[in-house]
Length: 219
Length: 113
Image 1: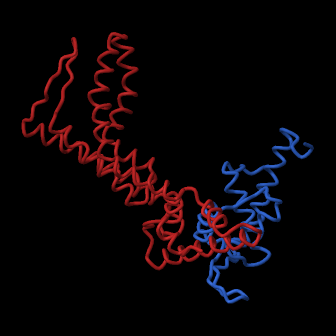
Image 2 (image 1 turned 90 degrees about the horizontal axis):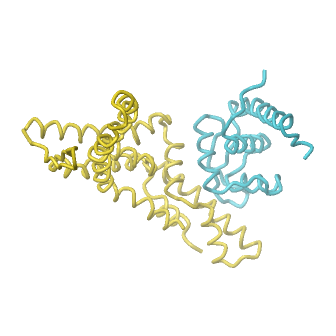
Image 3 (image 1 turned 45 degrees about the vertical axis):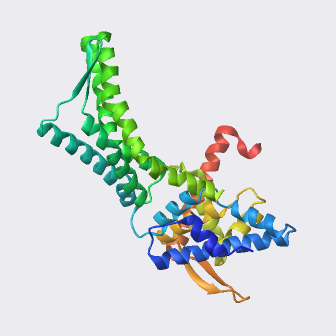
């Protein structure tokens, strides 16, 4: 029979709860699994089959850990969302924006790449810093117990604002300038949303992958 | 006037099931899941992953109170009992579900299906 406390402790990982509360939760969940397994054995299953069945009680330990952290913490849900989404998103956005502004102030010039009549401008030093800010957003979100969705939003926040703004203003541009404006829009999106977004995502990958690993471990 | 019916059906039904059981007697987690399974003929099932976040949420709202206690065999269990606040929630929750089934019945005749 496995050491159920150890099983729960390893699979739940860090819960961001006070140590005594976390031990309390681990003890309760371990007892549940132990009793579930005992019950399954009493109904005729072998020990290994009963253990496997008990482990199927939780498909995603990472998600359970986050849910329990929220439920057992003294904070309200809104505070959790603020900590796991809005603050990380603000940090990555501020970081990326201030870095770009500083570089422009220091006289860094964009590298213009002409694609027909349209020029795409690349601030290479700024683009090189984006994986750091993507990582920062995802890391802060994960540290606050944010799910993968929040980590993605927090890491992509620097370009999401622009994306949303463009979606809102583009219909006006199209209405006033006609569809001849569409190629400029596509190049602009690639230049300022798609490429920076991919770089932000690149930095965030290690903080998204961990959750998937935990998920696999749980299986 | 009919109360607004909750959209989170599964969550709401879980709350009602737990409150109803604990209104009878204090129980610990595994026993709650087992009794719900047995008494609903397996129609409602709680896994560890669905039960404890809900129990802890209800505890946070002050509807139930969990306390470690040894059972007759001397094993420590965290028993949950209904609080006065939780008891007050039971009647409105039951009424919401009654309204929900009446609404479904008038729409789809589910009670005659």
